[in-house]
Image 1: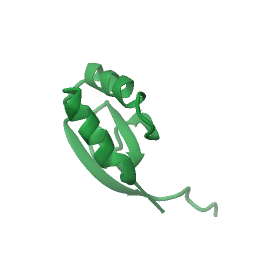
Image 2: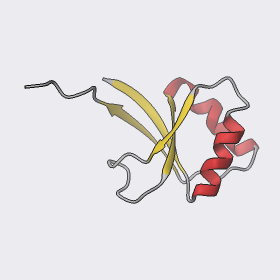
Image 3: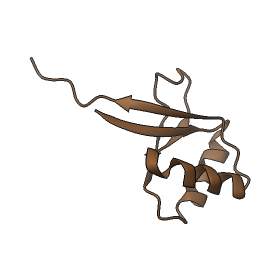
Length: 82
């Protein structure tokens, strides 16, 4: 099992802006659909290693990119085949 951190955004524009801002750093991240455990609505989240979350949060704040929420989620690996 792996633990990842997720930033969600109020709208698509801010998620794309966050992607552009964080791509200027050395942090590893991926833009993904918002996990179902966080919301059943459509949306884009930024998934990162939790070690990079503080750097990413500080960078978003410095560039005035508003994020909606921050979550730390344990992801399970693929289900075993019967």
